[in-house]
Image 1 (cartoon, rainbow, N blue to C red):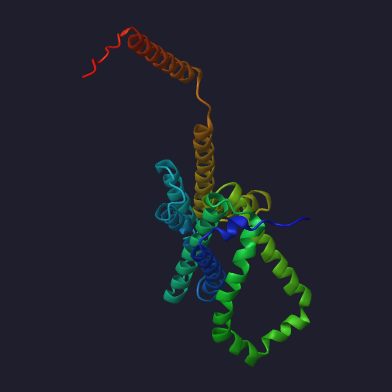
Image 2: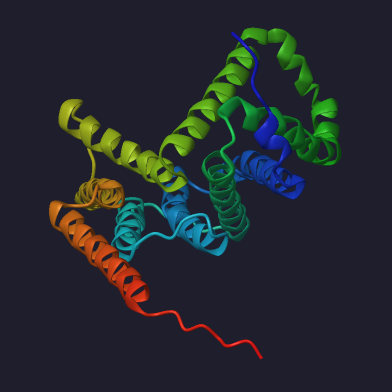
Length: 286
C-alpha cells in the first residue's frame, strides 16, 4: 500500500490545521441539534443558504473568486431550494441559531479544506492524518462537559455493547464520507461539492415523484425543477470558464506574437548596425 508523504502538511501553518479541525468538529456537533427543534423541511430550507456563506468565505480568505454569473447561479440555487422547502415552517429561535452555526461552520470547513488540498497541494490521506486528531481534541472536552454526564446517568453507553456492528458501520460510513468529500473538493472545489449535494436532493425528489409516484406539491415541483436548472447552468459555467483559462493561444495570437518578436529582433539588429557604423572617437591624452 505504501506510505503517505507528509512533507506538504508540515509546511502548512499550524493555525490553519487547528481552524480546519475546529470547523470540522463544530459542523459534526452542531449539525445534530437542529433536528431537536425544527422540522426536516425547515432545516432543508435553512441549509439552502450554505453556498452563500461559502462564497463569502471563499472571497474573504482569498481561496477563490467566483465570477458574477457563478454567484448568480448560486443565488438561484439558494432561492429555489428555499421555495421548495417553504411548505412547512416551524420557527424556533434555538433551532435556527443551531442551524445557522452548523451551516457556517460546514462552509468554513469546506473552504479551508479546499485551501489545504488545492492551494497548499496537500494529499487526501495527509489532510486526514493531520486533521483527525485535532478534530478529536476539539470534540472530547465538549463531550465530557455536555454529553458524557447525561450518557452515564441514562446508561446510553451500554448501547455500544448491544449494537457493536451498527456503531462500527456508522464509523466506517463517516470515514468514507470524509474521504469522498475531501477527494471531490481536491478534484473540483468546495462550491461544486455543496451544489452537487443540493442537486442530488432535488433530483431525488423529482425522480421519486415521476418514477415512484410520490405526491409532491406544485410549489415543491417548481422549486426543485428550478434548482436543477440552476445547477446545470452552474456546471456549464464552471466548465466554460475552466476551458477558457486552459485554452491554448489561437493561431492569430501566435502570429501576432511572432510579428512582435520579429520586429523586436529587427530593431535590435538595426541598433547593432548603427553602433557599428558610428566611428569611435579617441580622446587625446592630456
